[in-house]
Image (cartoon, rainbow, N blue to C red; front, side):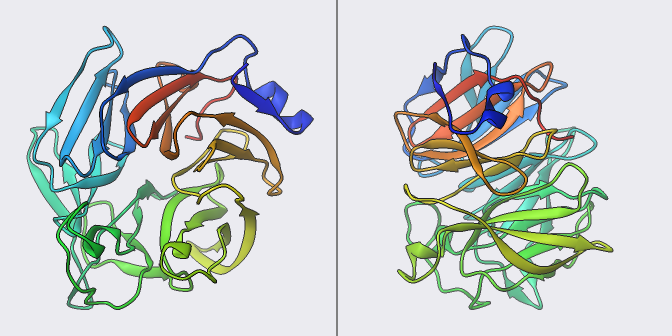
Length: 298
């Protein structure tokens, strides 16, 4: 069994005979998986190779979706089925329209260029929430090296059709993966500031939402192997988090209840498949998947 049960609450979420599958390998640092149900395919980024890849559920083929892709990182699918992308080199959040054209939704805050948007999720009202650390401008490996114009890294909200983003979380050093609880009442954000400050805690922070605004954050979970990265909630409110030893599952109270071990460092994840009960994981050089007995939060 590829799932490790640490708490009885994890046992009903996994399938004893379901095996972890490696669907593809050959990347440098793969990230940002997103499931497009209307097309029955998954897309994900190979950031240093500046390409977006596609895995077709109908026949298992992998092809290049677009290259170059402006060193895209995280992705989400909006309520109209359009792909929303965080661009390192573009230093923006963009959307692929149904006709294939690219539309920039957010690129500046208070007249300053964004750092390098990293991950994005859809809020309860359909707005886009994204993190903006500096990883895409720290070096030339995942984008274009540059100085931060903002001088900080925040979590932003921008309307579904774009506009001026609003900084919603400003108390983190390097916010990374993020997701909402199924009822929209809590925003979870991974802190990866340890890459820049050895004193920064390795944690997921939880922000209670009040009238669409996150209140003071609190510690939710810690990681003792590598860093937390991408996050997703399932329909029961459990938080599935990419980490150095695979995917960790935390109950709504923050308890680590189980994990899915991977042979590589996990970067990001998403739920997909016809029943949204298949967990897709990007991990360093490869794409993995495993069937679960739970579904992704709507």
